[in-house]
Image (cartoon, rainbow, N blue to C red; front, side, top):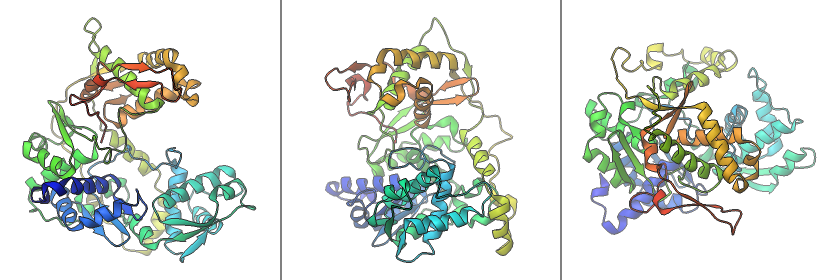
Length: 472
């Protein structure tokens, strides 16, 4: 591992490069910023070898792009595509994005927004339940959001005009884009031919990527890579979520130390698992504690939940986390596969589909008893009442959109805590996961001078070193 041989004065620079490529997977001349690509190119050889050895990831670096091809061990809904206004993509926007990439792959060096919309509309008409009607404002807005996502990553560069003008009135507005073909090519590189899949699970696992790693291909080495991948991809790695043979690896000081050295992050160990604490902010896609109504209410709610769990006079019932959340996500994605209109015709004109045994990995350890500790269960009624009480107390400091919709505020705040793996929603209520305990005793002070910054987290909200904590 190169982190052991790089000079101490250069190690911080190398670790910054590692965090950037792990956080973004695609780096271009403008994304995530203009200094990222030169940083990656400076350390390309070392990064390529360490990513392969530690995680089994493949790194490709060109003059204009750096692309990591990760190995997915599980599905994760925690990193959705977002619009420039931070709205999460819905199914229509994802569909337009995929079809826009297909259209750009066949385009020349430039394209107008209306031309791209016409091509996407033509593709959409061949998919049951999907259309792009440019005379409908909602469709235009969704399409512009997809184009904006591509523009942010450098696949498109605005040469003239305004996308917002076209979205408002396609007869009066127009936009012309330069197409960066290497970025378009780097964006969509599926590990398997999609027409050969009948489940999203076929995209999971090292076998799907064809990745060749420098580490010996032993079972022990692969187990170690899976655990390291979990450490950098998940905010918290709970031992009970790992396969039985992976749990001893999580407890190994050397394995965790290797990830610390590569990323420059600090590992926080507890009996239940390990979390990497990103005080730099360059690997975390969510900073927590953070600014904004959702983050602040989430911190307040975490403190209330922790107090409720510790109330010995009113003990909470406990429940087991029976099913993994990604199982339901996989089912939802599989239901959206356009089998009849897209996959089946492609499979008929190309190579036959691989056997089902090769596509879907077997359910892990179905025949084994895997006892899991019970987690405290918070009732939904208590949750709603608590958020309402917080709104009654601090509501005047909330952003306007949340003051009038406490129900949606509750949903979004719980989703944030779930994304950070601090809680898990089940049918009966809210399961409190162990990592939430690190936020007990949070103290919040209300400022009165500036309405835009009314919440301040006290010092004891932060970690023991006073540096603050974020989900990675």
